[in-house]
Length: 105
Image (tube, rainbow, N blue to C red; front, side, top):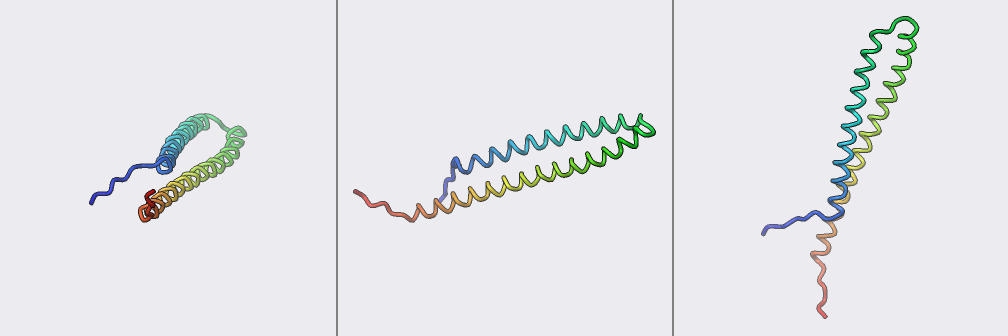
């Protein structure tokens, strides 16, 4: 026998959210990479105190950027785990309901 599987709202919602999050995550990463590239070009023309002050701020920026990327990555993992949880619950509920006999009136 062939079992037909259809997505329920509970299955589809985390998939859609996950895809949307990943799309925005890639957009943020691309923007950060573009900004970093532009700052690298600007920095090459600075010297003296300006360059030193920028180097200090740049290290702070880099640390915060890593923290942000890490938080986005963790959020993606949590959404993925939620998707697995919804799917597992849906499969379990279907199994339970398949074994329930509804009395005829």
